[in-house]
Length: 161
Image 1 (cartoon, rainbow, N blue to C red):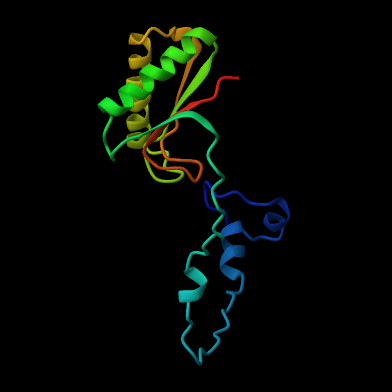
Image 2: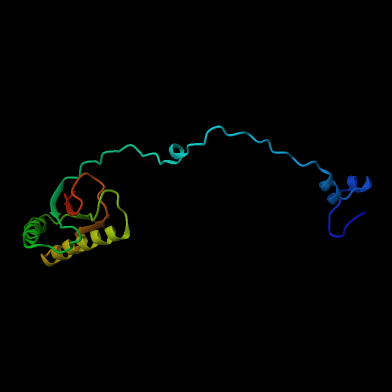
């Protein structure tokens, strides 16, 4: 007996069986039950394993390091004086240098920390342009959270190479 729409293998069909009949005739597998004597403790197995703390490297030597208050992007008068003297020294050298800004705790790459770092870097960049330095000599990098053991909220002007 063949049901429409159900495929039949030739050997089974020759023996007079349909695929549906063979499937019903197969013995059902019995699952073996194992008695549990103690409840399983999964607290240790599911607990996250903490990675070993790796100390952050020392910060690169900076020609000038400006420290900011948390969430602050404005240059105070003392920082402006430091930038003015840096600009006077760099005018004579005419070398390229990096402005590297940080804006958060270690390894923080969130959008907020990168934006804060960028605002700080651009504040320093803009001040140095008004002080007479060329834009083509500055490389601006906003990294977000610190990647070394230096202060979290800072802008470093790295030594010219």
